[in-house]
Image (tube, rainbow, N blue to C red; front, side, top):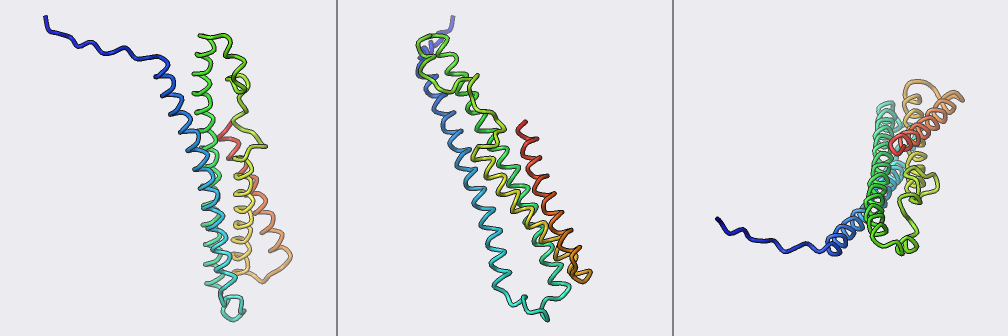
Length: 195
């Protein structure tokens, strides 16, 4: 009969601690990524707006139909980046929430083993904040990105209309209206992902 090597027993406390530490790291990474993504979008939009304001295109003679359409395209691209930012923020909030659920599963197990621990934890599975929460930092960042995306889409519509027709009150109304619609659509996308 062949000799079977016996593996040393795994200590339950060590395994739980290792899993808990891993979960803590994934939750922290989700929060770091969220801040990085929101900052990147703000810098991208700010850079483009600064470039536009710093150019000589404000001279009406250099502001040709091609330039207007180019600006419209650039603002549509920024709107798409904003939509991507909102989706990423929602996914990172969901990842953070999953980490919290995993952490609470370990805590629930520990409390089932030692009843005194139930007073040690503020967040348990039943008291964990909601995944979709309108007063969370993630929601505020998504709302900021959605508002900026609404503005960029409104600007895209403004330049597209300005390239095709003379400016009028209708141009401003359509631009503002479509911008508002895009902002609300992005917030509904964020909510749908997290509900």
